Image (cartoon, rainbow, N blue to C red; front, side, top):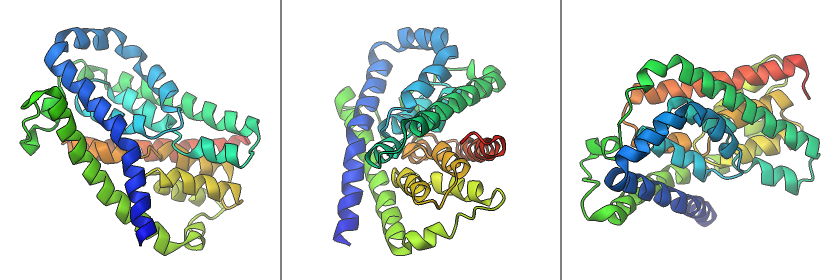
Length: 282
């Protein structure tokens, strides 16, 4: 139990700097340069999915967590959020490098995730363009339902208050997830991934939705052990966005929208995994 608690603490601490810097930037935007930033976002927003897909591929989950808060504040579009979540790699790259996986395999995974994230992001923005022209939300709105009075005490205190709230929430969920993974064991998890039909992709996609970096670790290790095929691996990595969904549900109070985003990620990830297997990419 001590090890489980320690792992949960370390996983949460790693996210703290990303969350704090994100909230600090949002608070600064709200108080110092709101009009200027909104103008820049409107002008460059059409390129958001491209930038988000590339940045999301960086092997860490802090950026996906930040994206949830940025979308809740309507600083980025829904398409950019999709691009970041789909391209997020979490711990996949370090694991593959440590296991001396072929560079061609690593490049194929990263490029697939970037391209899929980019295409899905642009498609979402195209479909939602009328709704997303009505921007102007901000971090204060994203937490107003909690009565936390974001602006009180200065931007640093407000950012720190937000960060502590979200970090504590992430810690509790991470602790519970780590306990479940430890109790189930690798063999039980492996039984969830059959190699026949599309059930492997469907199961891997569900595991990827677990709002924790451990999901990418599990999916990657199962692939290296021969439990998953490439399509299932891709499905799990596409739906996996680290703590991104967790932060989204915490900061964006439109639950129907959050559920729709989650469902969209799952459908996109599993469909792409099935398609990759069908065309025999790897």
